[in-house]
Each structure stands twice: as structure tokens, then as C-alpha cells.
Image (cartoon, rainbow, N blue to C red; front, side):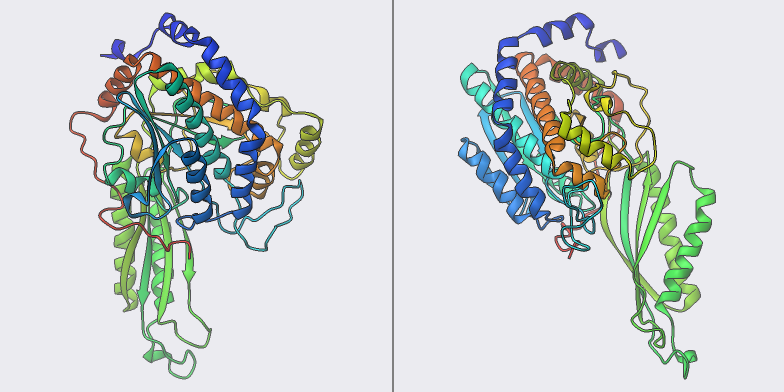
Length: 475
């Protein structure tokens, strides 16, 4: 069976050599329009809209695609800021994934010293302003190529809100919006350039709410039942649970409400939990054990508990056939080359974190390998990857050594460094899509690999259950 899943070196050579003039033209076009797309990305960077509140960001990308002749379906899957932009007819259908949500609490100016734009405000610490813009730019170039080449095929840009904890793509999968898609391509900002098969952790989150009885904490404590005691008892039990679960599991929490005054027994308290593991089936089991901890805590503290699942994500199912193709195109495009201004900025920002990271790494393409470290992060792209073949890349939009979800990532993403990495991503996605349109058999190989990896018994059921999109989860 394995022999059907490997695209040979000779076939890759034929694919990547086919239509070289078209590829050169697309790369030149994206270079020529870099400032246009930089302006779009920076408007989204400045707005820094968090999950399900990306009203301006979504509208800007829609307007950009509408102007280029895409048919737009707005507010899909019951999400006001989600959309699908489509051009073309027939097969193959290629989906390009676009994100545009920011993260709360990481506002930062585009300078190499920590200084927020708005204290405690939101910022694009995961670079989604670049992500959505590059995917849009790639989709427009693909559309132009389809129109001029008269090739059969459909390109769709999926505007996917709330990747950061809101599971926007999961609701789009649930709505069947990927059922006729042949391949999905995506990318993510990074501190390096790589197209190796991606991994992520499955993840399920919930808010656990405890209800007690308020009372004067000093005059009549015996009349009270502390909801905060319930939260703390749950946390203690979960921390003991860590010894008896697979060691590659991650469980983390924050107390989102612990009471209002020390002299009042808290009648309400809430704790927000994430449960992660490389396998979705493990997450299901471990999450239920966390629920039992909550139930026991409520019983022991004589309080009442309920919980609300906030989001749930499958782990990424990597696709080697597509990843090899993306790597070939990323290698052709090349990495990010710093000018003197970039070097000055990068050297200053590297003094703000530990490690010996070479600036030349931004121009380097990580060699292709299937033996890559499994990431400790999670993404709602995971659910899509169990439905259709998916491949993605990372490009050096951040200074080498920078971690995601940091002020340093926000800062670099607001400079020419981020824009250069965005352009690399747009080029790579566009060239990969053209290879697939020129050789649709690639989709057959990718589909066979997907079916083999997920198994004959697979039936998709979202980890978040039948809940509706939590449109207010960032409010």
C-alpha cells in the first residue's frame, strides 16, 4: 500500500518543471504587489480584532477578493465573520485557508523594545494579519492563472475566524463546507521556513463553573459554601491526575472568576481548562477524567458544578504527498533575505530573549523530513486534515528564535520582516496550487494517503460536540 503514497523524484521533477514561465510570472506579480498586500496586512495588524469579532478584517479581505471577481458567500456556518470566496469551475477544488484573529493582552508597537500600543490590548502575536493576507494574495494569483490558462479547476479562499481558541474551522467542517474539496493548503507565520509534514495536539477546552452560597466570611462562615473552594479542590485533583496520564499530555488552566471580596464567601467561581494530547482519542478520555475531578470537587465542597465546552480540535493528520510538493515550491521561492534595516531590528530584538540564533536562518529552507518534532501547539486546521488532504508551510515572518504568542512576534509582524515572509508564503501556495491543477493525479495520491492514515472505521465527530459557535468567547 505504501508504494501508492510516494511521489517519485522523477515525477516531482516533472511537476516542478512544468509551467516554469507561469511560475516565474506569478512570483514577479506578487513581488510587484508586495506593497499593496503589505497595506492590507498592516491595516489588519492595527485593528487587532480578536476571535469572532474580526468585522473589519474580514470585510477588508472580502472586498479585496470581490474586486478581483470572486463570488463571495458571507456569514457561513453561522459565523458572521466567516466567508468563502470562489472562482472557477470543476475539479480539482483547492481550498486556501485564511485566518485573521488577534490575541488578547499582547498589544505591541513595531519596535524592538516592549511597548504596547494599548495597555492590555490585543495584538497579532501569531501573525494572522499576514496569514489571511498571504492566502488572499495567493488565491488572487491562482484565479488569474486559471482565467488565462483556461484550466479546469476551482479555487476557494476560506475566511476562517477565531483560530485562537474559538474553533472557527471546526464549525465550517461541521457545516459540510469542505465535503467537495480535493486539497486544502495553508501556512503559518514562524521564525523559520519549513514545509515538513505538520503535527499538532488535539485539544479540548471547557469552562467549569461552581455555584455555592454567599455569606459573611467572618461573622457567619458556617452558612456559606465557597464556590472558590470547589475550583481549588478541582485544581488540586487535576494536578494529582497529571501523574497518571500519558506524559505527552498538556493540561493548563486559569481561574477566570474567584469571587469579588475576601470577606464574602464566593457564591460563584469559574476555571477555564485546556486538555491536549497528540491523539484525539486520548483527549476524549483525559477530558472525562478532568470532568470527574470537577464532580468530586463539587461533592466535597457541597457546591454545584456545571461546565461548558468552549472548543475542541483534532490533531493534524500530515500528508506527505502534498508536503513534498510544497517543500519543492518553497525551495524554489527561497527564504527571507534581510536588508540592513532588518538586521538592525533583528539584532536588537534578539537581545530580549535567550538563545544563540543566527539571523541567516531566516533565509534558510529547512530540509525536508518526515521525522520532525511534534509541536505542542494546537490548531483547528486539524479537523480539516481528517476530512480532506491538507499541507502547510511556515515562513520566517519573525526574527529567528522568536516564539509565537509574544510581543516580539507582534513587533516583527508589524515590520518589513513580516511582509517578506508573507510574500514567500503567498508565492509557495500559488505555485503549489498550479502544480496540482496541472497534474490532478496528485490529489488521488494525497487522498489515498489520507484514507490509509485515518483508517476504514473513521467517522468524524467533533470534539466540541453539537454546541453553536461561541461568538462571545472573547468578550
